Length: 235
Image (cartoon, rainbow, N blue to C red; front, top):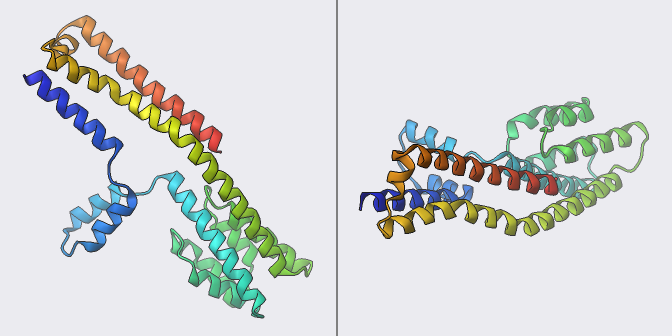
């Protein structure tokens, strides 16, 4: 009976980790809560910190919006510095503090291209680097900046659509890998329900302990290998 209870708790924990709340749900709970202790806020911020992939994706979406807003401002007849300043303030970036040098350079007539390049994050900042090159060409050569920004925006939208298509195709293999990772816990639950005492064998005997270690290692390697292949395919 104790083995079945432990196996059930292990299965429930695995399923909760797999199907836990996403970042949007956690943010909504944070906004709707009226009283939070500082320790709870710090813990919640740590638990809801977006993954590097989601953060890079957020930067790419924000850069596309920036290019669209900048193109519209330039088409309206505003100067490049004013257009960039208005476009930057209209877009919600994941980390707005890192973009202050860009706004300062655009307002004061500084080196906007260098500010864009230095402020671009390593992951997800390729759009800002392309915009920096576009700005450099527009300033030094005198080419039409609005047309260049529109071309960069179109390129970023095409690349983003391709990444979303690849991510949709990889959703099935990722889900299958997670389900296969949970199956050993379900097997323990079924064995405990049949009164076979699997936990006593796994934790109470040397062969069982070796089987447990080997199973966990193979399970972890399978998840890592599947995630690695999916990440390389998506990249």
